[in-house]
Image (tube, rainbow, N blue to C red; front, top):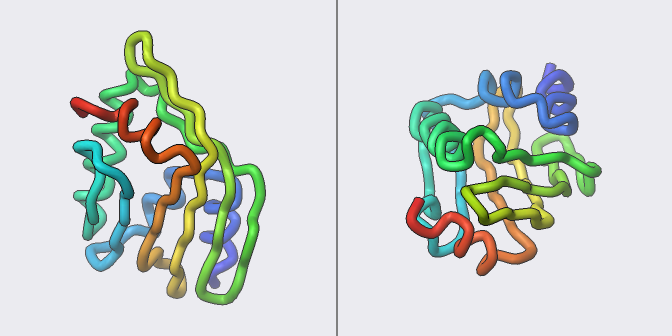
Length: 125
């Protein structure tokens, strides 16, 4: 039953991932920018995604590269985040750690290889 969600996470299929969020899901966004913090619930998480899309004119992307670890309740996906804001561009390695339960994402931890660079990119956001 969890396999379709796992496949969506592996492939970066955002609409399917969004459907797996609920009011108990928590997204941990690291760093010191205005986007950093813990977001609980489907609506706050989707609002964060929408804000990121708006700030970047739709250029914000996570491109999965490979699955590093996969268990019955966890999935760790390695990839690249990229985005552009005016003359600023961001491209950095990122790690997404998902805690899963049935067809629901319980928690998401985001880790960036170059957190200071990510914070500078999102400054003022």
